[in-house]
Length: 494
Image 1 (cartoon, rainbow, N blue to C red):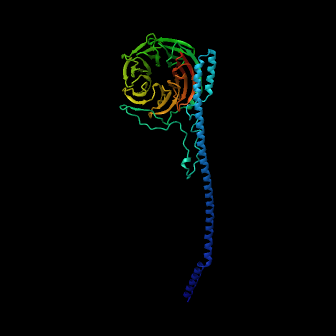
Image 2 (image 1 turned 90 degrees about the vertical axis):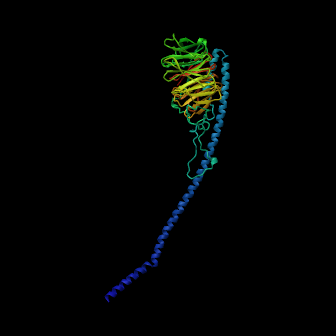
Image 3 (image 1 turned 45 degrees about the vertical axis):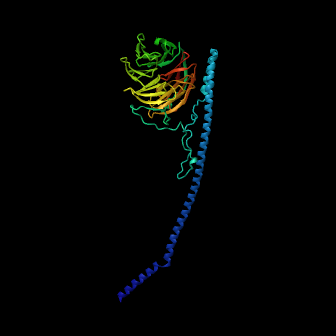
């Protein structure tokens, strides 16, 4: 009886527990909790949905502003380019007027001529110098106004994100060719200009002196040790001048009254003169009484247009009117090699390491391997080459043409950095500064111009009477310019 009573109690308690778990009270409490959480989730969803809508509206506004800014940039670019083109036209007109005025000034009395020449120099200083409509536009001044927006599609016709052009599109050229297979090519534009150290660019071109000589000055060269001395090639003579004291130091007769075409001075002050004869004359400046003569045995040669020296002054290069280049050993005075290839006279030469660069009247610039005398590479031009100058950094060479153009070539890619319409007539001489940051050009149009190296922007220019036949730049940035008016002018760059 006691056991059955206990079993009955357990059964009753289990039944009561089961009835509690299935009661409507428990179901109602559970539904209330779930409903509360669902309401919170719906509320947060609506809040997030409202924020997404706001963000989409802001995104649309930013997209519209972005398109408007890009369109404004395009319009501004077009306006600036048109303005620059107008200034270029004014520059060309100004150059023509200045050329006419310079020709007429020579007929005025001397005092009036000096007065008007000073006025013209002042005008040139303040007049903007533009030869390219992009000169006033730089990509850093017109940075793209695009605001980056993720997942926003902007129509292609409104995308104007490119930087402003600095020249023609780049053209990929073939790699360096083997010396056994020289390649002939016309230079192409590349978009990698030489790097210019802006802090080294001169701020002012100052006219320091004018020296009157006895004949046409067709060659000038500064002394290696003292930039106050320069060597001038005249008709039948070479004169050494101290320009700071305006006095002639010495005069050396040579070449039987023929014009001197080029002068080079070694580090030990030996002077090499060449001109309209088939021989070269070497003077020891300290004792010029006993010059050394280097004769070309071939009688067909009538003139030596240019001479060059290796970096160690061991080798002398002479360029002749029949297209040959002779290489001499200055220690033994023997002819060691002859370069054949040019069909016309070789007018200019420059040397860098084991490579020789020669320009000719056959419209080609040729590169030669000094070790074997073979042609490595060839550039073709549409005009005679009158002058070349290697950038001291070794990455570029400037080529002056009869057609008034200067082309700066990229020696690493065999391409072209840029071209400049430098003068109104033939480019007669080019010379880089020792830093390589700028170079000087003179021409038949009576102008001397200084260009920076990276893009060919004209920094300064001056005019003086006559054709400016030659120039040289000293290590401390003095410039000597020789002219057909028997004048050597000295300028300083600071």
